[in-house]
Image 1: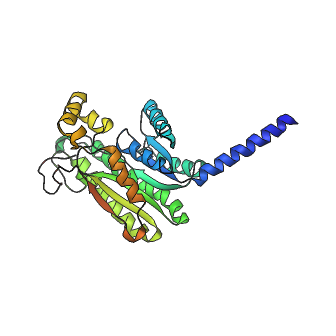
Image 2 (image 1 turned 180 degrees about the horizontal axis):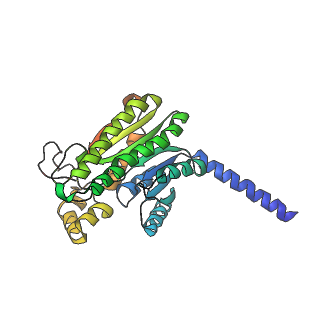
Image 3 (image 1 turned 45 degrees about the horizontal axis):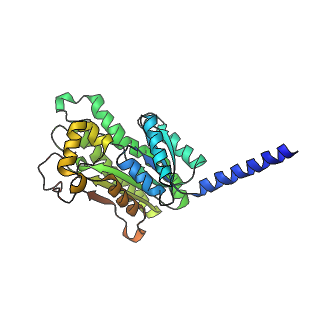
Length: 281
C-alpha cells in the first residue's frame, strides 16, 4: 500500500513537472553551432524560455552546449537534426510542441556556404544542396510551425541570413541564389502571416562573426586566430555572437505596432554591403 502511494505521488509529480514545462514558451533554434545559434539560445533561456537547440552533427558538442546553457541558469534540450532529410524538421517541431512546450520563437540559423566555386565547378547537386538548406528547409519550418502559432494567435520566426541575400559575388552562385530565395521567402511569409500575429524577421549578418564553428572552420585555426588578433577581441571588428543574440531577443520582444521585418548587422568599422567592394560572406 505504501509503495503504491509513493508511485502515485511520483506520477502526480511527474505530470505536474510536464505541465509546467509545457506552460513555458520554447525558443527553438534550428542550426545551433557554437556561434550565433547557441548564444541566441542562451539569451532566450536566460530570459525565461526553454531553449531547444538542434544541429546536424557532433553529439558531444550538442551536449556541451546544453550543459553550458544549464550552467548559466537556463533550461535546454538538444537534438541532432539533418535539416535536408525528409520530415526531419517537421518531426522535430511536432515533438517539441507535444512533449516540451509551445514554440513562441523559432530561430532558423542554417547556413548554405560551400566556399568559392566557379560556375563550372558548381554541379547541379551542389547548387541544389544550397537551396535545400537555405530556402526549402525554411519553407518546411514555416509550413509546419505556423499553424501552431496561428492557432495561438502569434509567434516569431527569426531568420539568420547573410550579405549574399542582397549581393551576389563571384564564386557564390549557390550561396547567393539560395540566400536571395531565403530573403524573398521571408517577405512572402510576412505578407501572408503578419496580420495573423506571426512576425518574421530577415537578419542580414553583414560581416565576419567571431565563431569557431563557422569562421574558424572556414579559415583554419591559424588564420582565424590571426584575424581575431587583427580585427577582433578588444578591437570589436568582428561581430560578437553574444551581442548578436541581444538583437535577436529585442526583435522577438517588439510591439506589433513597430515590427522590424529586415535588419542588417555589422561591426562599427566595416563598410556596409552596398559600399564595399570586398567579398563578404
